[in-house]
Structure formats: C-alpha cells, structure tokens
Length: 249
Image 1 (tube, rainbow, N blue to C red):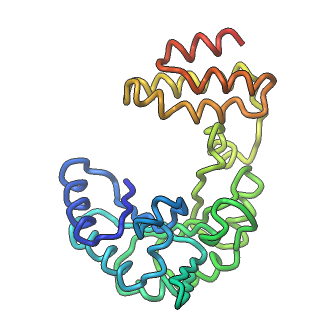
Image 2 (image 1 turned 90 degrees about the vertical axis):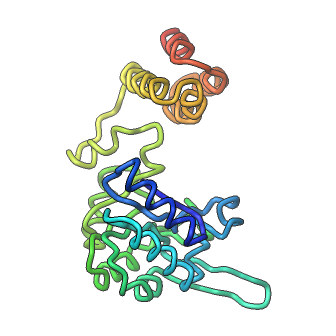
C-alpha cells in the first residue's frame, strides 16, 4: 500500500495501523506525486526537497513495521521559497537515505516541473542503479512493450512501474510480458471495461462506480463515437447503467 504526507508522526501511526489491520505485502512512501494540492501539504514530490524531513518520514515508517518499505521518487525536484532555491535529484536523495534499509525504490524519470509530460531521463535511473543496493524500478513514459524493453535494457533496472500507460489499457502488462501488442476490438475493450465495472461496484458500491467514470472515459479513447460515449459514461451510477450504454454501442 502507498502512503503520502509530510508529518513523520502521522506516518508512524499509519504504518503501525496498516501493518496490524490491513496486512499488505509492503508499504510504499510516495515522494513522486506532482499534484498541486498534494504539494501544498508539503507532500508528494515536493517533500524530496527537504532531505532531513524525508529521512525522518522514511525512518518513522521503517521503525513501525516489519514489512518491506519502498519509496517512489522523481528524477529531480526544485523548490523555490522566494529567497532560496532547493534542488535535489534522485542521486542526492538516495545518497542521503543510504543508512536506511529501504527495500526498493521506483524512480519516475521526469522532474517535478515536468509532471507527466516531456522526455524521461533514463540516464539518472541508470546511475541510481549503481548506488542503490536494493530493488530499483524504472517508471515514466512506458506506453508500449518496445519502450518497456528499451528502458530496462538502457537503465539496468530490475523492473518497471507502469501507471498512466495502463489507463484504459490494463492489458499493457500482458503486452510487456509477451512482447506482443494485439489491437483490441471495440467488443473486447467493452468486455474488459464491464469486468472492471463489476469489480468496482462489488468493492466500492456507488462510490466505486463514480470513481470508475474517468477510467471508462479512458477505455473509449480513440474509438468511433468516443465523445458521445464519454458524455454518457461520466453520468453513470451503477454497473447496470454502464452495461446499458456499452451494450447499445
């Protein structure tokens, strides 16, 4: 499971509760999120710029769980406080955290300023692999199996993280494993979307369906009549609503 925030005491409580009640396979600390409202809390990627506080956060989690602790970071972040500028890259960050038993690190190869756009810095991931003794995962810009293969080869990373590349295309993981991309028909895409919807409703009820709306819009991206479909899908309240819309197309 993933945690984000900026208060070490809160992380300690969350880590203890998660370990005892939720019992996940591990706990990941998010130092990679570029969302503005998260940054305003001093959390996500902007927290990377405060090396001392970042160290305290990671240590507080490690001290309150027996589970493996991983982190997700960015290639670099820059924080402008007006009078001073703080610039920290992934290599500096990992060097400052080297005394902590971090099990794995995922590096998004873009800067905080880039967000989810622009060129991915594969070189810094490669350099990080040389200094980090644990599992290192590469992330950013993976939208097909060819890019995935090249990223692993060029960086020497132990594995990949795929996020936005899977939005509306959860089959990308199988494509990467098989090194083969099959074009999905509209019928196949709708079948997968409906399976996703059924799970969302089962696990989250109406709230799960509301959260799913944006995913449904991603599923239909590029399809004929996508604009009209999106207008209908953003209003769905149940699995039945979704099935009715997709069955009619």
